[in-house]
Image (cartoon, rainbow, N blue to C red; front, side, top):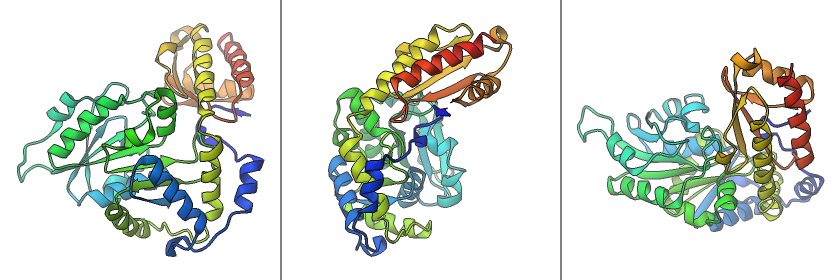
Length: 344
């Protein structure tokens, strides 16, 4: 099975496994694991922050940040398509007791005017907005990259209103490679930001949350509450260090493969996609049931029977993601299989 369903499907390479096997380890919770410590220092420097902590997942990083910045009954402002709103099992409400105020942005990116209009009156009857959250790149926005000036504008306004700012950096390095903007520049307007290791970078697990020393100290308390102590986690952190050394620049190949996939899909009858919108490694397209006679789920099922897995999101929409285990040849093979499915 050639798996386009997500970039979390990547498998650690033999060289990454060797790095993990030879990692020096200790008690992560007691700051005695030198490999975890090295990874946290590396990511903090990459993002221009004072300190960082290692977590099993980006979802946990989001939940830690929200619970660290907000009190129960307060409000987080984010795009309506944000991961924290869709894919974290109601975590903001369950773990931090906060409300989400979601904005209808352009492919996951709202502008300053939308943010200004979203603020409720500073009145005891209304929840207090305490955190602005953005996602870079925007998953449900098809891998759209936030322009740096737009990020700076919304973050500056949030700070002027007394809010904290948080960046979900699940695919931040995809944005860096696509735009040429440094990770530290993207991270600068945000009080907390995390970097995923298990998507395009190819590590089997892990994410790193960064911010000020004071924030990370507070975040550790939430991490403990969520069960986040990992003991000899250097085995996992070594994969992250290997990924940062070897798998960042090659994200360009994933972006090239995504554009090739989108262009090929646009030439197959019954599928709808604008290939000019592809900025990174996420490719969303629609299945026209009136033309093809079946919906997105049936499309995905028939394609999987031919050995290629893509992810249906609803009756029309399908997501395909390129990553380090997808080659240019795999893209062309998948396009041939898609054409076969669409031809009946």
